[in-house]
Length: 62
Image: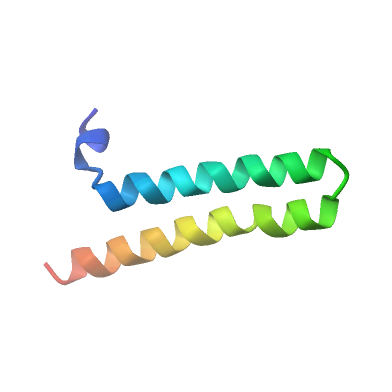
């Protein structure tokens, strides 16, 4: 529960965006457009990596 309380609005939006990207990628992959599904599916971990990087920079400045 402590983790949920520490989430800010931007964090929630980024996580929601990652979830949407994963769902779209799965839809594309399962409907036969496998290459586009894989390409879009790689965006979610990239966004999560950027989110982690920004958190690290923010914590180092404190």
